Length: 148
Image (tube, rainbow, N blue to C red; front, side, top):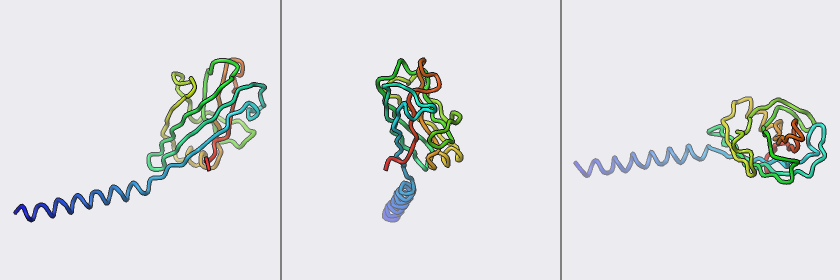
């Protein structure tokens, strides 16, 4: 009896590993980036502030994860958000707010996106905006685009 069970267990294990490998190969991660600068604000700001947003979007889980770093802002960050849909030079509503407890650089976060949000993000219609008390509508901003 043992000689029959072992091949079946081996076959079941091989099929399970094959299914997991096949499923994993369909998952894709898209690297995204935004150069954060005061001249990208609408209207443009006068500031020495600058920064970078590095993000990844997982197509299988619909999860957006990000790290934003910044320096030389006019004061402490009061808010940060992903906005959209909007092309460069236009403003739009908040799509994903950054938790106020993680506003220090580097700020990190994650969010699960809706299908419409994914469509707009992948079309380059989102921007990332960092706000300060001196610039309450935003001090530095950058359009979120594929990193390559």
